[in-house]
Length: 143
Image (cartoon, rainbow, N blue to C red; front, side, top):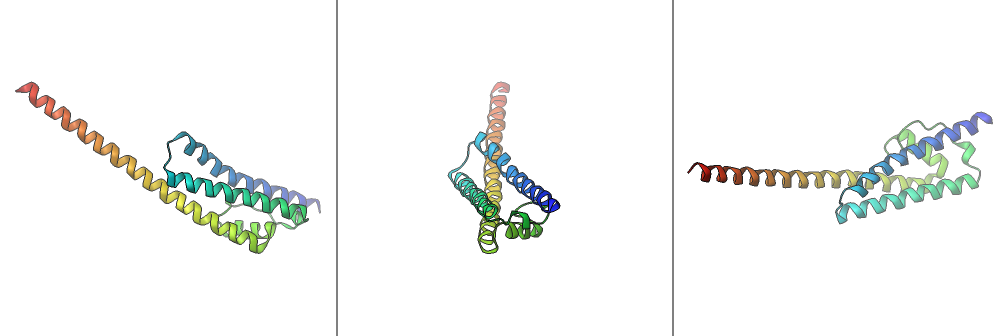
């Protein structure tokens, strides 16, 4: 029984660590100007994280907490994590949450890549303008 409680505790700690990774990214998103698309995705992910917490709280209150097995992987990216979460939170409810989180984190990654591309393209265009302006200035100075 003590081992089950310890294992369950470790599993919940790991679950919260995985959530912590998103929250660290969230800190970056808050510090950097964001697009409306990224803001929308971030809000949706936060809603899903709150759903996970609500489901975990519900299942803990129903006494399923001691039934979980050790969870040593990343939350919504690993089949072992998915199995753990299903066991902890309930098969049907968590299946939907995990699918939404997976979809949203993929969308987050794609949006981040698109924003990065847009910024790099803008920087390259600005550098090209500076180089062109410098070249024109040098031509005038030598003439």
